[in-house]
Image 1 (tube, rainbow, N blue to C red):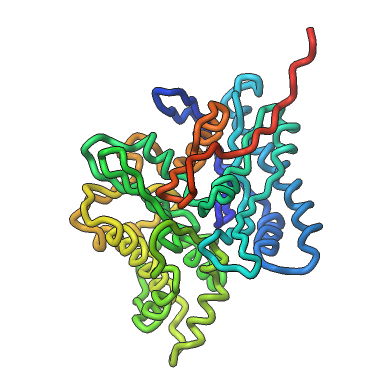
Image 2 (tube, rainbow, N blue to C red):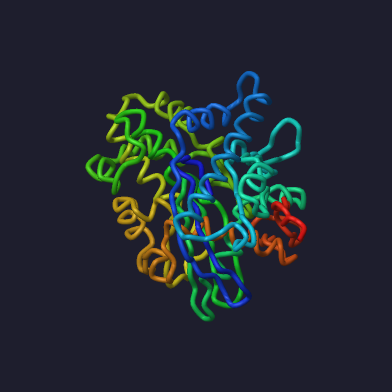
Length: 371
């Protein structure tokens, strides 16, 4: 899994069967800075896009293969011991049906050539999970709720699984088999980009810079006017909607420009407020919220969420037996398993698809030599 923050490739080795999922080993594979810059550049309209995308697709395929082989070496496993690789890829565009674009055809696009991964590793690779859901009329996101239900649902207990990656998404488990989910809006993306611009850091460790600042009320009110927060029903979003260019536009509308640290604190409050609003708008009847993703490490953000979601309990998925850092990587391993088993992976009530569909295309690994 490589998310919108492009900080690293998360790899999880899992054992999956009808009884459940076990997380056996993990590793974080670095993304070279030059590659990260190429991903950032291709994620916005520009010149010579097709050629640049084609080359980067291959480059990321090689990088994902390296990450896989690195995890196998770390664990002493051989490629022929692995049933399949589930590769989410790197999202470079997410413009789903809820976003009105001139062509009228919503789409999502992830790169990281699965042919290259399968050839380099020799392991069957399942990839391109999101586009079949969009073909069935869905948003193509979020896809984690089906996994959250399989891994974390408990009869009679009302839980929310909250993934705070670059974009935040929430899964509501009603304790009776019902599953709802949606993207709440920004997670770490604005926080990471703002601190990178002003302090050269990849992220705000523990949310310390934001915690020491003050919220600018005028900026917060302006951020909350984004039309995404008025949408109802299945919805998803991405960095196309929430990015520094959009933030700069909002800052330009203010009478007085806040200090950089004030902006960081306001962005943290904005993230917490939109997460809490999304969850409480969907249901006020929850027992606990369990956080996964990089945001689970942000102490300041967790404090803000605790205050806004009380009296519901707030914890991380570690309390449910899975390290919050690796839930999303495990989810795409699980989706690959579902695909190979001929089982659906989407939740139509979440994505808005017309039906349950099998997600992902299968790229066979190298066949064993005869004899």
